[in-house]
Length: 297
Ligand SMILES: Cc1cc2nc3c(=O)[nH]c(=O)nc-3n(C[C@H](O)[C@H](O)[C@H](O)COP(=O)(O)OP(=O)(O)OC[C@H]3O[C@@H](n4cnc5c(N)ncnc54)[C@H](O)[C@@H]3O)c2cc1C
Image 1 (cartoon, rainbow, N blue to C red):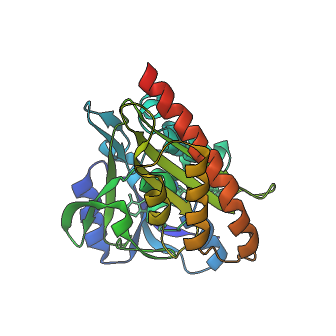
Image 2: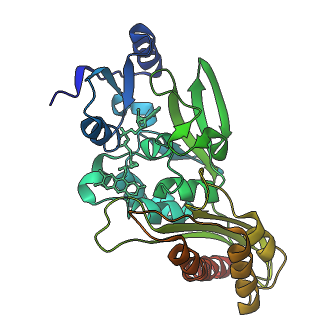
């Protein structure tokens, strides 16, 4: 089955934009192709007139750190993220979430940009980027700008990006400092190779004594059409002692405010609701242990 008529491998961003312009909406950006080509095959539609591969644009395939900000190109693969010692130190939850995407063959080609551009609320990399408060650099309708990653999402599989016109370039996030840490966990069907029953990423900062949560960001998904921060859970943590009682309040806040839906492929709403406690506790405890040990060293 023919999936495309022309395949382009631009080496610069202007070249990719010029190609998109030349095809006037009939070309499509591709990265690893693990979402796009499977969908194209399943839908059985006419071949794409052209695919424009962004993974040959070197500047979109780098991970860098200037001491303060971490930059991750949209064309960076999940395997690159997992192997990055920089990200293991600066963005542990992202490394953990990218490490469970598909199997090794998928992770070797699938990109973090593709995970976000596909705009599913429970994309594993996406959930961690939201908890890390990442920003995305995009070119939308010719306008190049940075925006909070959450603002990219419009609904399930819908984003601000038109992949026949626009480009997602890179992500930026603040590196992790002493007393701060992140963690990610997910619950998956045993035979599952795609999206989770439920995923959870948390980022926390402790106060100087390590006795209270000074800041917290929590993303549990899918519980809405787009990936969202669980603000009630965050409010139950911030300013509170790092005790079991606070964990219990955070779980109670999650149960009171999050409404997961039944998915015929993954799990019932009731099961997901119950699993919120397991996942949130597990992830918060890991983040807390990490934050404490980073404060000591
Ligand atoms: C067997 C299997 C298992 C999987 N398991 C998981 C899993 O466990 N967790 C999970 O989250 N996902 C999973 N996925 C889904 C998929 O692998 C990920 O979402 C992956 O990150 C997509 O990246 P990609 O580079 O392959 O995207 P592509 O398929 O190349 O692109 C996806 C979409 O984004 C657009 N796009 C890509 N890059 C850009 C860009 N830079 N600018 C603008 N638009 C862009 C494309 O046009 C397309 O619409 C799985 C897929 C398979 C096939």
